[in-house]
Image 1 (cartoon, rainbow, N blue to C red):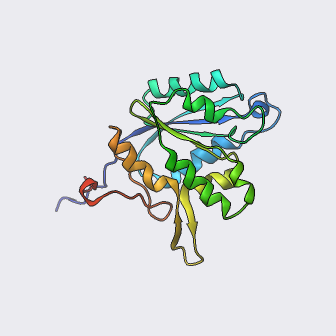
Image 2: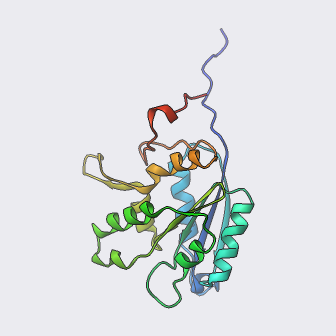
Image 3: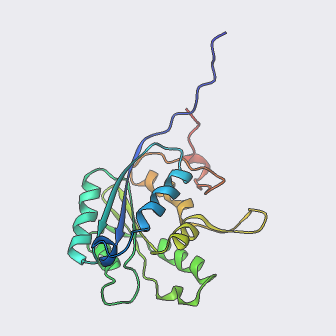
Length: 202
């Protein structure tokens, strides 16, 4: 009898990951942002991912140009880390808004809500999310632990979700702007879609 059980096929996706840091980009210390983003996305998504990594300094024009370059290269999702605080060199939100077609304020609101569970200084974070063309761009916190917390959300001791992470809304957002169908591993992050938007596995 032939084997009729085929493994599910998942759409490939190109994702830009950008770490923004003067010191890491100059080699003063080891960058931890790109590995954190890469590892979390590999854990969270079934889709084959082609990564476009960038490590750049805290320069507004350079950040904006990098985001445009990644969108033009076909990245459906671009995640940045670093440069979102109140310090003089923190200009990632301004650089991101400068290339936006639409702002998506709910992402930043939810990230701060999650982080406030841990530290009162979360109100100093200025992360934004925007749409440019058919790409979603999201600014994330700078620390690997905070990156995972904001993407995954908060779970109780039994593993049940207490507060949804922002990534739960990312696949449907990308559906709505014409991108590939992202499928998450529910043990890491369960994506939410309206029933009418859920596709059967192929």
